[in-house]
Length: 213
Image 1 (cartoon, rainbow, N blue to C red):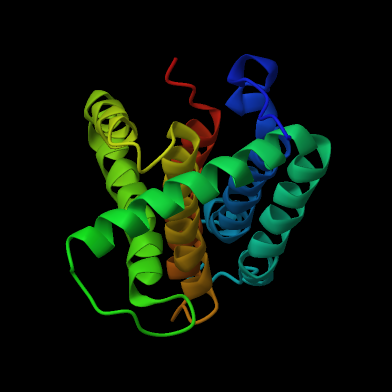
Image 2: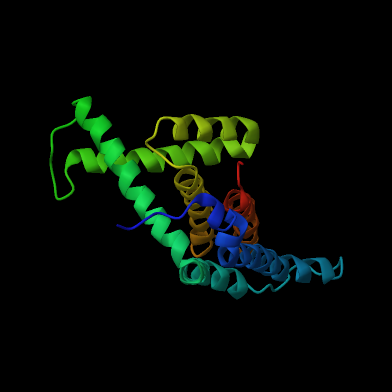
């Protein structure tokens, strides 16, 4: 019989997600540096100069490399903490089953597709919970913490599941902003998009580090 390690034997979230947190902070710096390559030549140009050449490529490079940087960091964290990964998978099976049971009991939808509609609803419910927590954390962290505890109390989620999905929500919002860099109408817009992404990436750092206990 396989036993699940107690949470006390597992790393704090800031250690479990250490490589991801480093990658996120590096991405914040890269976004700022890329924006700086746009603004610096403008600041250095003499007042009498009408046009200023700026480098857009650093912004585009950040946009293209961001997702891969974060994917590599997540994989490294998983390799470093196999016991934590095993526990997360065990808990995910339990909570996923609980959400499916709730969906089935409520007769919300008929089974459909390879996972069944109940399974799809269960997956969407977790994603929605993560989105809600990330949105609340931006404006009122205490309300966000209260929401996480309320979700965990139902037995359909774990704290780490909700916080990890909130991280994903914040990261995705930041990556979408960076994706727009590639189609920006001018260098200043591209720089502004790089900087706007940093707020979401910084939120992801906070959520990846958060241990509510």
